[in-house]
Image (cartoon, rainbow, N blue to C red; front, side):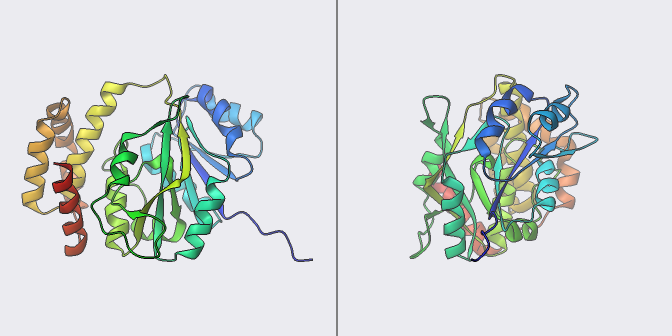
Length: 284
């Protein structure tokens, strides 16, 4: 008899002070292995997780690393694929096996962006609606429409592609951190595909500062443009961002981080920049 095949996907969860959400979401990841990276919680979250879920590997950080905490988790993973989840999200039964099958069959695909259903009723996340109508070319044989973005809690990534692209970065820190990684994956030649048959569920935590998140998203749109877009597109991004409800505050919040963004600046290859402009034009 041949040995049972090992898991192909590990779930990586980054968290901070969200025990109430984790005790509901962590059991739903079974049977996939789970690595939980704790962003310096001060509410005993890591201890509680270790006691209640001994099969979950818990990594405790000494400081809040934001989205970069996921890099720590990915570094510890041994499976070829990684599925990200938030402390208030999980994957539908069978979703990770399906994603792994598609990645096995499509070695040029670096990331699968899932359909994310929000809340108990399962309302389609608006970002997913936009990805389903992506203006990018859909190539024969690929598992879904090409995109240049994703939702972190609805992404299954090829570990080697993630490491090649550098993972998430400390400049944007958190909120809207996906765009820079998506652009860098494409810059390295990886395809990103939206596959609605792969489904994740997200029931947003009540422990959220929604207004602060909107400001951070606006900030990080600007910082990502500084890091990767031509100067003319940086200026256009600033104008578009300023027109948003929280845009001015987001631009002001970006200012202290601009020097770090400039140090990390690496303009996109022409084909990826052209694809990004095509999506900008479609969105406007």
